[in-house]
Image (cartoon, rainbow, N blue to C red):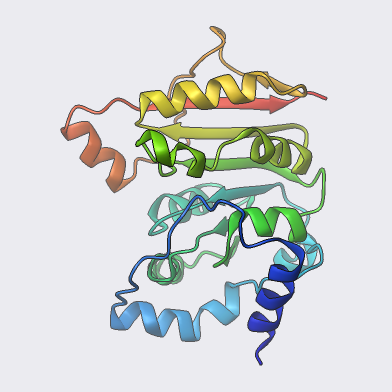
Length: 239
């Protein structure tokens, strides 16, 4: 049994399978390039799931600020941010393996060295691999809104998740979310505003202007053409 399968088995023993997941396993249609990247590049900048906290200095080789992105999709915006912020380290979590492969290809093309990736459930990674008070920022861009009422429970941003993120952030660290679903934006605003320890970075107590450092994604550009508005929320850990 591989180390990855051993870790998966151990995780299932610690966390019950009835936990509602915010994602579903999709059919994995890989390109040849993505398959090759997963085979050759993931061992170089990928991190295996484990049941003990990682040391960021050990995986990056320096003590730069760490930005964690959850659900980076195909990785274009994550690679752009890593390229534009060489004095920060970026740690990306994504469950969609073809997306991880695509991100690896882009990272290699741009000669990115301040990026590490893991293909696993973000909640599991946060709970077992990320020590408290270690992250400078957590980014969650365009999470699945699960718009049908009966599916709302699948939304990743719920009170337990937001409290988990708060615990992992350093004092002064930020939780930045972007969504094109107004009902989800309003729900997340309500959830996080109610949690002691967060301060809304908006002067109006709701949304912020789109920060210049957040690159446009293909998903966002496509939505704008259809007339979709995007809401950015940012919260700072103050306690």
